[in-house]
Amino acid sequence: MENNGVVFQAEILFGSANSTESKRIHQLVRKGLAYKIAPRVYTTNLADNTEAIVKRNWFRIIAHLYPGAVLSHRSALECKPTPTGHIFVTHAYNNIVELPGLTIHLLKGRGPILDDKPFFDTLYKSQDARAFLENCMPSRKIEEVAKSLKTAEISQKLAEINQIHSESALIRLKEQATVLAPMLGLEKELKVLSKLISAAKDQALPSTPNQTSGLSSYLGKPFHLPTVKLLEELYGHLAGNNYPQHPDLNMATVTFQHYAFFESYFSQYLDGNEFDLSEARKIIETSSPLQGRKEDAEDLLHTYQLCSNKKEMATCPKSVEEFIQLLQKRHAFLISSRPNKNPGKFKESNNHSGISELVPWQLIEGTLIKGFDWYALLQDPFAKAIYLFFMLTEINPFVEGNGALARIMMNAELVAKNLTKIMIPVVYADIYQLSINKISQHQDFQAFIQSMLNIYTFSSTVLGDTKNEMERYLRSCHAFYLPSQGKLRF
Image 1 (cartoon, one colour):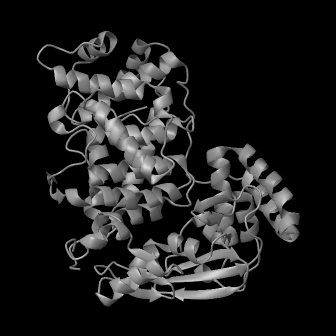
Image 2: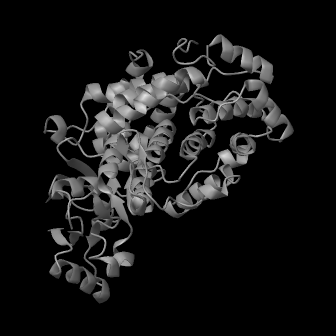
Image 3: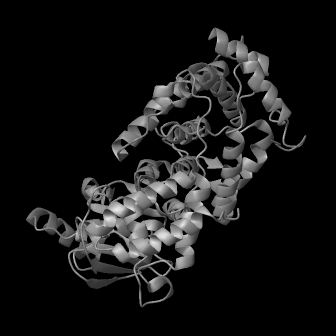
């Protein structure tokens, strides 16, 4: 396979006791379409280096090779390998397994207990209380080879919990750790953790497709490797972090709808569908389009109808199949007035966005499926929301309506947790777009994350018992200014 950015979705294959499956894998190897990278582990990706392939699929490999194991110690808090590829897992025995680009440290210990949740497939993750206890265990090794984080790093994570989720979260953490410690034989570690929690309470933190077509159903759908690498790196910047969780203060149906009006108005503006505010209000309140702008008006109306529907906005995908179906269903509704734009159907031809070429249309579905892996692994609601938003923005799966859909999918993650939705006003449009471009063109992930954190904080301040009251507040923040006219203030 040429190094053209096309890789099959099933880039990792596992040896099987099933003779048919085993024969298929050996057939691929004989034809030069796959090669062995470790005992019982093969790859069909001939376009990338082996270390990168293993690192990108570390969770899938561990889940298959060590079913029922628990992502533990520092790895349970970081949710990813260390920069040099070390990962720590509690299993039935001790061992160190060396794979290209990945060192798996198997630590003998107890399997999943109580609130330890599945992380990926048959791989579990230590719940927070267990993970903090495990990180209080002494380690003779230093720096990132050590299974435990340094005391200063543990203290920082506890301080983040205190700052972001309040002291009550630390109290619950200690209560849960008190229950777990005797079960795990970690009573000494409980004493260390208790002291660190007490200290944290008193201290705030500063802020080629033709070659393999006959085997396509076996290999899965092909994906766009450059985009998947970008998504993998974004996951690495988001994983294991605690972000602010701003409760939604517009929970009453009427205020939720007021917020949805301005959210939809701004969302359509970002996509070039501009209205006077009075025109937009008339469209929403009467459900009737403007003369000569029927399709534009219906785009706004349909966006509002999705954004103002609490039940719909609290729906998030639990599987990749649900994800694809939800994308297509919401898109079909959003642009139902534009049948020539193929509502609900992925693109069937290529296009360009600025200086960047988008994912080739033949690779859209496979790239969405592959990108869903990291979405499913992320724990923090804000992290999941902005990851999903960026993934859809970058892949651009439909002919039209991608921006509005990406923002709706992002906000659904927040609504599902009773958190405030993200509203992106006109005055913030340039900063918002620039931060997205900084990932695509310069791999500046922190600029994007910080930009979204800033606007998330602003969004949490948008309140009002009436639409007029909410509008007055937005105007006081310069929300309706053009980017050249001023800056957002709140």
